Length: 142
Image 1 (cartoon, rainbow, N blue to C red):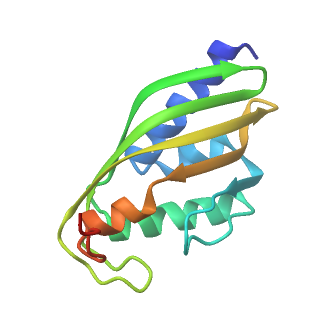
Image 2 (image 1 turned 120 degrees about the horizontal axis):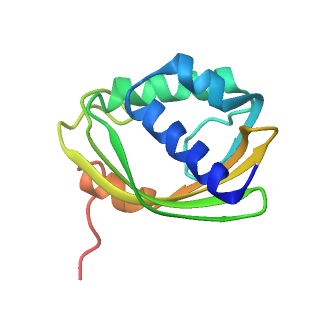
């Protein structure tokens, strides 16, 4: 696959998640998918099935969630994505109760492609800022 095909694969993945098209997600993601993230409280994800469960749960928390891609950069078997997440917290998020507030946050994903599927991802975002936006933590005083 070319880097342009890798980018198209990642775009198709984001579209499938936005549409909650889990059958399409299964076609795009390797069964032994691994997701890495240092975000506090997120479970380890070590398979495509665990990823789907995580995403279904995320839509339970943010039923109107949408990811918008700002840009993609590809090299070799990796695609880096700068995206924006927008969603209203209608369900619990770990120990945090629903806030009915909007989370609007940029984040970075790096995907590794293998055999025409997404095999691995590294996901990072500003969790502290997100918890402040949702009203779960107070903003630091200036």
